[in-house]
Length: 402
Image 1 (cartoon, rainbow, N blue to C red):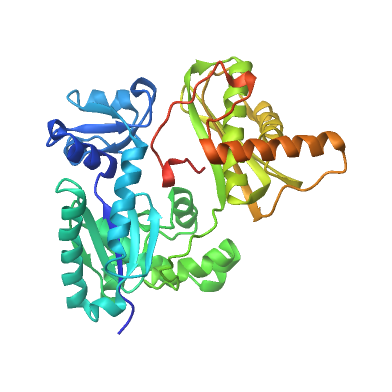
Image 2 (image 1 turned 135 degrees about the vertical axis):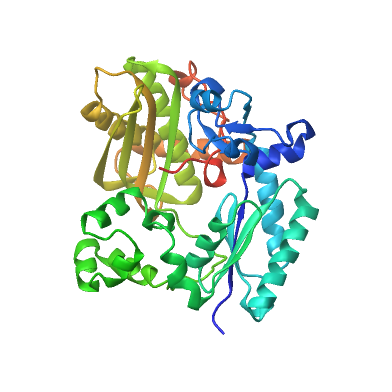
């Protein structure tokens, strides 16, 4: 018997939590926004809103145009965090092998508990009933069952909302040949376009494409593409946390602006937030990336790799602002700024021989202790007092990773 992996994906998660909490919203089209509704996107659309054409990541003005009756609600991260903690705790009642994949998705290895595919379906049904008991009847989930994580996630995506889909090993090729390349987790739109340029338009073509040429084109990722096309994957469900590949933050400005001082303030604020998260989790970075999005929704981005690792917010800001100045189209007003650190490693900030820098590191250490005790907003730079970051709910742990 092969592994039995269960992937559970909460349906319209943030919206469902709001409908469970507020009976007035039940059965109505609602959209959860990241922050101020007039300059935001729909982070999650309710099942009712999706049926009327509202999609995730759609701008709020476009969503209201499609569905005038749409009720827009500012997201409540603390509420969603509580429910996420509640259902992940529930999953451990079924198996010790639980891996949180995102704020509303998890993988469970139920091989020992289910014994066979019939037992797996029965376990999935019991889990769904327990979820209703613990979180409420409006918070539902789609469940995929398969011999590996890749096929389990694909299976959960096929029947929404509230479905249970089984894909056995012998069904994998048929299942893959019924979907688009970009429907599989791990193949994004850019990768799909590159595959299309090679004449690979579907999984049948991908299976037929020579492995050596895939590796020449995509390096080690070519091996993964070859295995994925056959419905195979070697990754196991692990309860251990995986180190992030990047840590970042992006923010839509209160209004489109040409003002460099306003941009600098928001960028500095984001750099401080990112640097604090890095220091809190014991990381330093050797690369920084920026993204600039304009009022017409076009964008520019750039990365810089440096030698001396850092987790200092002001150093990140100086590097990031130089990149912004290099790529920014000064003829367009800026709508959004984003900063991301990568090439992460577990280390402390390097010591300095200079007294001024030693003093700075000492102050930073003291400020970190204050933040650890009183929260990330316990202190701020005087230059950032004129601006306010609105809380928003998006991404894993409600932080945005670019």
